[in-house]
Amino acid sequence: MLMKERRSAFRYPIALNASYKPSKKKSIDGGEGKTVNMSSRGLWIASEQKVKLGARLEVILEWPARLDGAIELVLVAIGRVVRTRESGFALELARYEFRTSKRKVKSVALLGQLAATATSSSVPSGAATATARFRVPELST
Image (cartoon, rainbow, N blue to C red):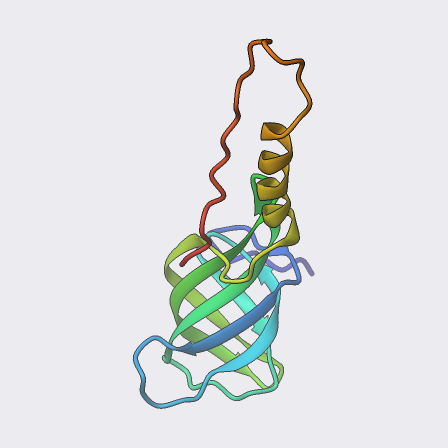
């Protein structure tokens, strides 16, 4: 017998590290887990911590892609727990956004070194030179 899919958005299997906490400092402590699948409307998080049905959570997912190949990203999602099981919970998303991570990445620091090297290259005296300036962005949320 074939099961009919009742979800309105297709879920994609993806395993990302997740941390969560109440969106308003009430009821439950935060926790950690790993996504099992996600869609544009929700996600399933495998976690050993118990979460109350109906709880509003802020979930931070470590995103696998980097901004400009160097800056770590996180996906911050706010939503409501709509299903719970012993192995995890389903979160219906209310909103989400990408943010840069607070952690610094070595490749960003290397950009500053490249800028310094570019300005101190050996050029014959009297030759026209151009100085390249790179601004290394501060990572913030």
